[in-house]
Length: 379
Ligand SMILES: [Zn+2]
Ligand SMILES: [Zn+2]
Ligand SMILES: [Zn+2]
Image (tube, rainbow, N blue to C red; front, side):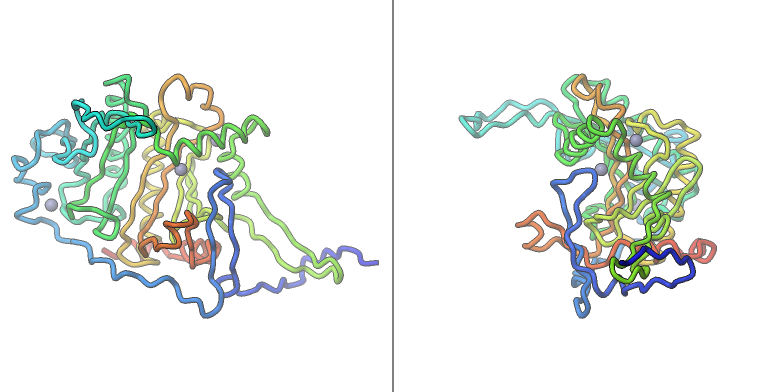
C-alpha cells in the first residue's frame, strides 16, 4: 500500500521541457482548435525564412506617412493632438479591402453565395517617427493610440447598421505583412463577424451556460493561482510541480499578459483585462493608461528575447448587434500579439494544426526573465 507523501523539501525531477515535449494541446477557449507543440530532442526550430529587416529610419523623404508628405495620402479623417502638429493621424486606406457599395456582378448562384463587400478601411498612422517600435513610444502615446482605435471603432459601428464587426489590428515589419514601413495600424469595419471571433464568442457562451462563468476569467484565475503537485502513484515521490503563474508574463493593476498554453505561434502573447469586460470600447481612459504601460513592457520583453520583433496584433472584442447582447457575461475582450518567426507550411495550412517548436512554458520563462531596465535602453 502506497501512501501519498507530501514532502515539501523533495526536489521534483523536472524533465527538460524544451527537449522532450510532443503533444497536441487543445485551445481552452475554442476546443475545436488545437496546436502541436513539438520540441523533441534534435528537432530544430522551424527554419526562419530570413525575415526582411525592418526599416528603423526616423524620417524618409519619399514615405507618404512621414511628416511633410500629408498631401500624398487621402485627406486626414482625424489627428491627435491636432492636424498641424499631429502625432497620430487617421486617413482612409488608399487600397481598401472593403469599401462603398458596388453593383454586384451577378456571380451568386445556387451554392455560390456572396454578400456585398461593404465596409470601411482606415489607416492609423501611429506615430510621426517612421520606424519607431512600440516599445520605444511613450506610454502616453500608446494610450492615445488605443483611445484613437476606440473612437474610430465607435464611429464606424454607429455609421451603418450593416457593420457587424470593427477590427483594429497592426502589422509591424515586412515579415508580418506590413506593406508600408512607416509604423501604422488599420481599422476595418466589416459586414461579417471574423470566424475566429465568432468561434470564441460561441464557445465561451457554451462554457458560460455550463459553468456560469466566463472562460477567460477562469483562465486568468488559473494562471494566477493554479498550483499542482503530481505524485508518482507507486512511490509517492513528487513527479512534477506545476508552478504558480508559469504562464504570466506581466501583470499590472488592471491587466495581465499571458503566454497561452496552446499558443499557435512560438512567441504569442495575449493581454486581457483582469476584471471581466466584454467590449474594448468600454475600457476607461485610466485603464488604457495602465494597459499602455503593460503593453510597452511586454513588447520590451519580446523584442529583447527575439530581437527586432515583427508581429501582428489585433483586438478581439464582443461584436455589436442584437445577436450578441446576451454574450456580455461570457465574452472577454483581449489583445492577441502574434510575432512572426516563421511562415505557415503546407502541413499547417492543410491540417489547420499549427506547429509550435518552443514550449510555451519555456517561452514564458524567457520572457519573464528579461530585466526591463536593461531592455529599455535597446532601440
Ligand atoms: Zn515614414
Ligand atoms: Zn471574463
Ligand atoms: Zn481572441
